[in-house]
Length: 202
Image (cartoon, rainbow, N blue to C red; front, side, top):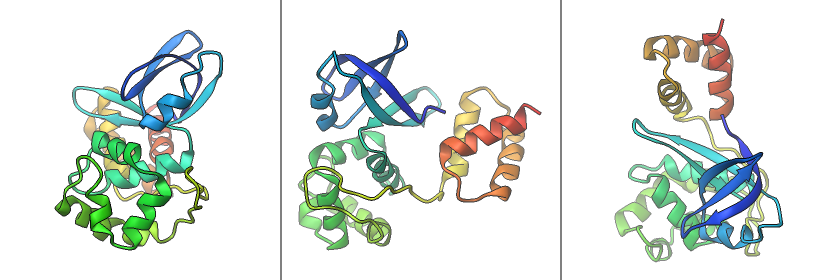
């Protein structure tokens, strides 16, 4: 799996950058704050990436901080929030502001984010308040966070989708994932898929 990319931005759009890594261009969807930081074509940047796998596409989402990627993954665990909405949330507010709004149950603050209505804001608070309470945030405009990795609530399911997208038989992939998860239930998605691929290659 692709955990991070380091290279130069050769093109930018309203919601993405194209990173040249060793002559290969990766299209990565990013928060708007990242686009400005990636504007200098003479400066290498590092993006911590999340691979979203669907039946018809595989998309990369990137973040300047690994902890921001962790928040993105937590948002994806909320019912009704997909990667584009989660990205819009991180484009519209800073991570400290988001975390504080959830912890303080400020529905009115969350509904100011494009694409977030009252019901969705309430779901975010209910499902993420306890998890966000464990996060240490600073007061500046950057994430100001200690390194944070979300729990593995749906890691096995995401890993199965990734393996299926790579062409593996679902039944065989399930067996491989069962062995991996039995050994360690706290693995991140990338590591889960990597170990499952080793099992499948035996």
